[in-house]
Amino acid sequence: MVYTRKDVSTLTRSERSRLVNALLELKRRGEYDEFVRTHIEYYTPDGEGGLRAAHMAPSFLPWHRRFLLDVENALRRVDESVTLPYWDWTRDRTPRGVPWTDDLLGGTGRSSDRQVMSGPFAYRHGRWPIKVGITDTEYLTRDLGRPRDPIALPTAGDLTGALNDPVYDTAPWDSRSAKGFRNKLEGWGPGRGSTSWRTHNRVHRWVGGHMMGGASVNDPVFWLHHAFVDLLWFRWQQRHPGARYRPAKPLGEGDAQHGRVVARHERMPPWDITPDELEDQSRIYRYA
Image (tube, rainbow, N blue to C red; front, top):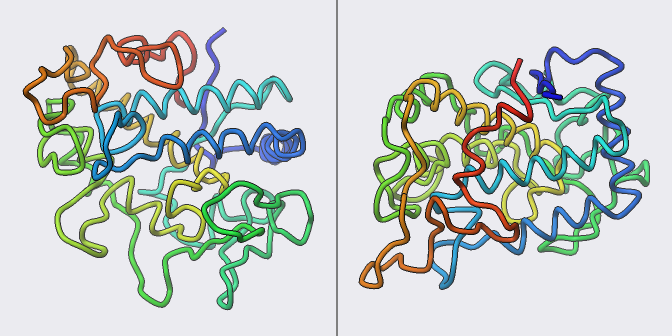
């Protein structure tokens, strides 16, 4: 049966509680940390050699679509009523609103060490220790909005260029792609600093703390953020009927990206599935 992913701001009190409890149960079982390990393993920048599946590559969107489905299936094994909500950061834009309430994700970190002190994922409750990461920090960290060097979340207007681009992705198929929907949404821009962090990437920077890097899955907001990114892919598909994932075929041996990106019908690790098989999610879930 097709299920529905809702805007997090519309969840009832009971739906919020069920989502939080399911996440905490995955953490207790040790399943959650496996998702963190997977994301760290596949967080391969285009400055390194080898295949890039999760980031800085065309498969950014189908890779995370499958990743979200995996955690959603795990949550639904705990509580079949739970689905992943999405956080529309073009509308809910402050550190004090949804999803940063005490009954959902809790708030920002304290100024001294960025440790999250409120909500169910605060370290002091003992139910969300950070066991897998790229640092030794044992507590969840955030720095919502970066008060010492403020940045703003992307607006609906910032998404216009991405949603209007009729081509899914283009050469050089990495963080340098100036055209194509994929990188305009993923958000790698030229230069350094805040101007180079766009759309999806800027949201990670705005949240700060654990959301900045390969261990970003340690913050449960990761799933809400990427559910909205997934919804934007769906909206782009609706806007451009017939537009498909690119590249359609494996790149030739003379191409600098040969063997480094996943083509439409190639297996996308760590799963035995192709981007082609993930372009249409309508038989699995819909968005409210």
